[in-house]
Image (cartoon, rainbow, N blue to C red; front, side, top):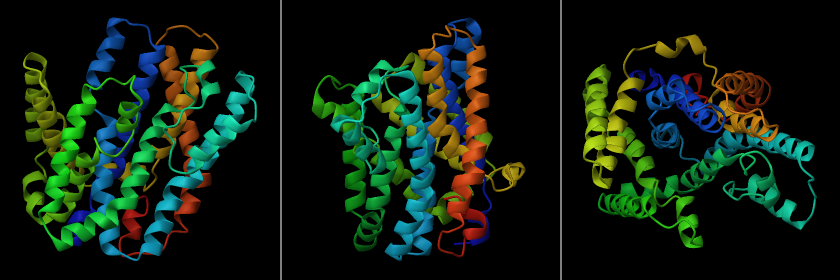
Length: 345
């Protein structure tokens, strides 16, 4: 595999776009008036930023682990990437809750706190249902899934090394879970649990994993072919509009979309140079719902200007988080061959 080809990419820009998509969709959904402009913005952003994260994670973390399979180093690097920024975010969330609601530091609080500092971030604090949208920081549920994927990735590599037959079966089982989850009754506890588990989303991670494992094969089909996949994706979305079914949805929004995402990553070489290696993605993702909740709580009412306020405040928090928390912690990561370009992974 040509390392220079795989290192030169636009993944930082892709992640930033995905984080902004999640932020704008949430802010627009809760705060903007339902004008034509608001609906047009939602229509333009009608792709899944979370899917982008899962795909990129499957690729980049697989690459990181493949280059250094020392478990101690792998675990240390994963912890440094996720937890320092997360812990500061959780503390700020507690402060915000204390300001806006009567927060009791009782058993239920510490039970919730334990889930947040471990790997069960999808658990909702009962008291936060009285604040804003009803959940202090709903997007954190995806961190739980990311953490589980990090945990099983060494097993995925081991299975793939031993036999090529088992992973495709797991891939198909995950798709079956996705199909079930897409129409399940969320009032049932087991369905709620499935929805926030790895099962319906593992196939998305595995797409990213396979893009890395077979990168030499895929590269010639994705490099500088972004507009081909973009046109294909748009046609697919139109087909979904007129002939919607779950299988077409999976094919367009996950398989075709994955080619679109990775084609963008390996086209337009150097497009993300303006970021200068800075990665504000995580901060935007974990802080934006604080401001959405605050504006909902104080009853600011509907208005697109509040979407702008959320964007400005979230980006400011992301910049502070990156330079004062995330970047210093990432500099503690164990050195690797790809650290100069891939240190944000």
